[in-house]
Image 1 (tube, helix red, strand yellow):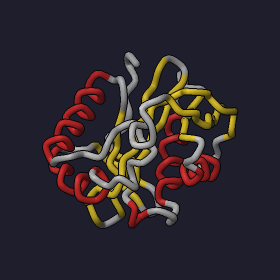
Image 2 (cartoon, one colour):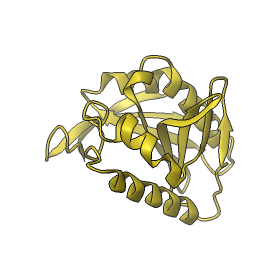
Image 3 (cartoon, rainbow, N blue to C red):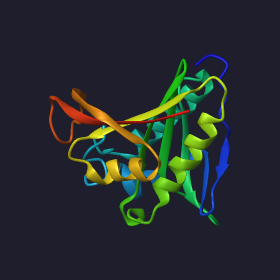
Image 4 (tube, helix red, strand yellow):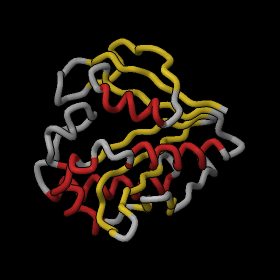
Amino acid sequence: MNGFVAPDRIKTERLVLRVSTLNDAAAIFERYGQDPEVTRYLTWRPHESLERTRAFLQRCSAVRQSGDAFTWVLTLEGDDSAVGMLELRPVRHRAEVGYVLARPYWSRGYMTEALRAVVGWTLAQPELYRVWAVCDVENLASARVLEKGGFQHEGILRRWLVHPNRSTEPRDCLCYAIVK
């Protein structure tokens, strides 16, 4: 999105969301990048090597510089090590979000907290009116995160995304959005 600039750092009550660096590769790879349970409903396969994680982080840097997407590493207050990530992809008047969180940090409200902070900042931008996300119809935990984050269920997008860890064919996805 031409001219859109996202903050490098967003702080919440328990988290610091910051720009990723190549120094995050080991923590991301070890904590969730290679975990088949974490990546079960994602659009990418588990990372087979630390080099794959580094390549992903280089992509994060490139898309941030181009303004096509803005990725933040989630860290716990007082510990700068990555426990997850959240990406915002703005296009015209709307932005899509996607996220991932290491398994030991599930069910603690961290992703809902991060999501609320990013959505709050995003909708405060005058040119953005809608933040939306999709999740696999079987990914009820992610659907719950979106609902707790204030998103409203809009429907099912049939054959929307390939989740390669579930199927090689496009799968149905739940669509959620929050608007101003």
